[in-house]
Amino acid sequence: QVQLVESGGGLVQPGGSLRLSCTLSRSAFSFYAMGWYRQVPGKQRELVARFTSHGATVYADSVKGRFTISKDNAKNTVYLQMNSLNPDDTAVYYCNARHRFDAERVYWGQGTQVTVSS
Image (cartoon, one colour):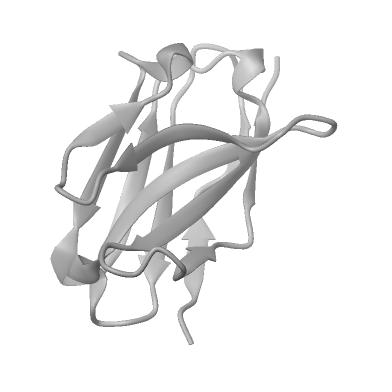
């Protein structure tokens, strides 16, 4: 059973920074393409940033230049560094893991709340 454990959300003022972390519970971290999505009430979940199956990065236009996705294979962990946060970034952020060789194996974290407010 694959589990994703997220941490790092919270309340931050506009212009501030947060770093989210997501750890995969299995050792086959390299078999998964990791990513971050977010959702606000009444809207669909949307991509924030992700790694492709080949290791390239993809960002939503709204976060380009402000957010950075990275990973530490030794720790089975993916990060989302969020800078210059604004109220529009307020959402529940979800970690996602997609098996690189089996499209049906997709897993989600429990979500972590990020609130940007003064």
